[in-house]
Image 1 (tube, one colour):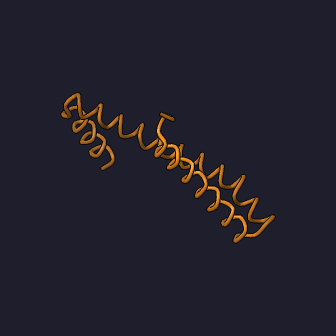
Image 2 (tube, rainbow, N blue to C red):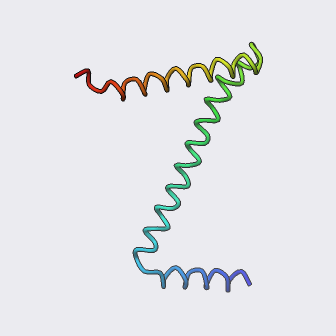
Length: 86
C-alpha cells in the first residue's frame, strides 16, 4: 500500500508544470520565514515583557507600554503634519 502511495505521489510530481513546483518552493520558504518571525518575537516577549511583568506587575507594565505607543504615535503624526519644516 505504501509503495502505491509513493508511486502515485511521484507520478503526481512529474505531471506538475515547472511553475507549480516553483510556487510550492516559494510557499515552503514563506512558511519557514513565518515560523522564524514567530520564534523571534516569542523569544523577545519571553526575555523582556514576561520578565518585566514578573518584577513590576501586569498593570504597570501595560500602562507604560501603552504610554510609549501613544507618544510614538504623537511624534509620527506631528512629523507628518509639519512636513519637512518648510
